[in-house]
Image 1 (spheres, rainbow, N blue to C red):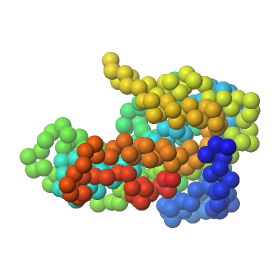
Image 2 (image 1 turned 135 degrees about the vertical axis):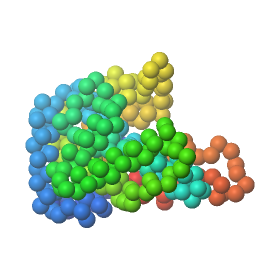
Image 3 (image 1 turned 180 degrees about the vertical axis):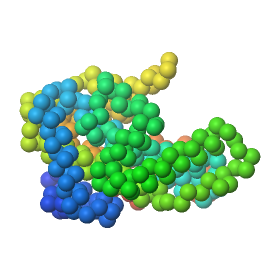
Image 4 (image 1 turned 180 degrees about the horizontal axis):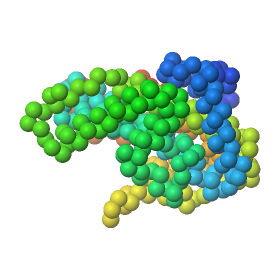
Length: 301
């Protein structure tokens, strides 16, 4: 039995907006009422149904890649927020604007990868430019609350500008006057929960509509997602290939974001950023391997 099947059997359902959910949302249910969430769930189910009623092996492979990528963006945003906290504590202010913005950007990418109206485009979805990712994310959030979406989008654009200012212009006044007070962790939590919300609706639509004979994960998609080309440089990730191949063998159907995460994957992802040598004082180094720190924006297993 696969780890995903085991987790589904052991799951406790959480009810809101007249739907049973695998995930126990923190921000989504605090910020939006049941009616708004129910309306958006119905809207998203209708959009996903256009895809799942015409399900193919390629579509199945594409969405496995998209959900896996979204899960990694949750990991990435979490890692960046942990690094941000450490940088603030150690007065590494030269990197804080970078970490603030990219934590939000990673959370935005988690959302975008789950949206049915955003085409796969032979994998170019994953290399979409920053402005487009931000626009798409907050257009989607606008279906829940237009005013909130507009306000948060402006704050994110400001964070992007701060990152560019420090990185490219090297102001002599440093980061003076760059404070833009809002809770980045809350925003990242809300965004990755939107991704989880979408992925659970997608999973329900697949179960209801998709042809189960097409639950196959094509090796081409695994190879493409594990091999990254940037300019003339090609990077290959054996760890990603192994995780994706496990899905091919054990659960070749797109699950929701929470269930595509495994304890082994999370330990390996965060463990990859552990120090490569011992330090005399623990406070001098960022340790990422403590599971107690991984749940800052999402209930990572």
